[in-house]
Length: 235
Image 1 (tube, one colour):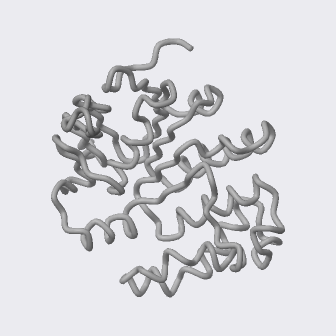
Image 2 (cartoon, helix red, strand yellow; image 1 turned 180 degrees about the horizontal axis):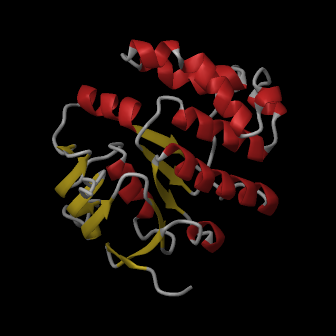
């Protein structure tokens, strides 16, 4: 069988944050390399401030590297115009953050459908309401779709955020500390859900986390240390 092309390739990525006393600034990321196949799952661990969120933001095109290249499905993201990057984020990448960022004035269903408003794929957009209801049912929120976020528990809000991230059928799902603001039971439920959705939908999953329980549910665990990714030591 032919070997699948990598979905994501990160090559020698460098990121610095200049300061008044040091215009170049020491590199937060000092030549990161990463390759993931379609449908794979990866946890990135490491101490606070080591650059995990920075790396996720670069992969998700929310920021740009100072050097190196990031390729998604064979296409380089480096140097793309803002409008092109916005299309990549809308079509190919889903985001889940530690805070759910649901709009309080909208229902759960309305929040989930928000990313489809910017989609130029008419077929995807037209099928979104039915897809949203099926996904909400899948994550246990069928009876909560007409509630507003303030009427949900923390775990329910985060599950709604996961559905919103998946509504445009992205090939890459990025989750930044998705269980960080949840109690233990809700965190375990969400961790299991992410693993199941990765397996069922084939979406490639990258999770930044301090939770070893969540990290060890991923197929790979890598540690960001001294500005580079390395296979995680036993923790």
